[in-house]
Image 1: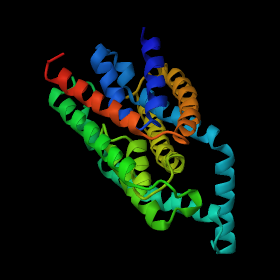
Image 2: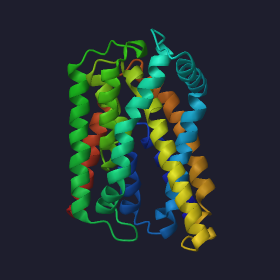
Image 3: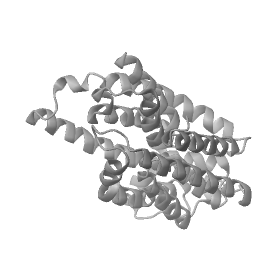
Length: 287
């Protein structure tokens, strides 16, 4: 049964990491609603497996983009020149845009996680109510960005100012319910990017943060196993979560980008509002 639950949560992570509806919120909500309380599903190793799975999806789907951007970034360093080369600019915009989220994550992510979902402790209904409010508010901001902005700018039109703004919005993702992709896509739409461009830049921008957090957590797991604080049996679900998140994440990126070519983001706004009502209603005992 735990294996099945791990697969379900891996699929949930892969889908909600990229759809702007908050993966962190869903990974709290799903076990909470179904009363899944196996400690293995709340372990550091399982959490790392899910995030590394979505990182693998990003690497695999954008493989050619990464090769081009990394080559362009290295060339700009060697030649000490960026010029009008779009790939060189984008490479540095991704680096710069990652900085706000990286700093905020290092300083506050653990504290926020303990506030909303303390390890080994029952979830506080008050925390769930606040999460529902956050989910609804971000839905409102996404709705405004969708309705008010002109979505005409492509990847080659992204500026340093855009990258900093979108990068700062990524820092808000430490709050469960905000959504990394939700905040960055919303910011991208607000500055006038095409929907697909906003999502593509959002996904590329998320990779360094996910990679950094994943490598740090892997080091924490290694130290925990070496010291005896983490039993080697605790990592049994690692490959299950990794594979489920990687596969579902890859196909989610593929079809979401295709969807956004011709469709607005309103469906995700309505889903967020419905989810917020559901979470608050359950937390208050109405359901």
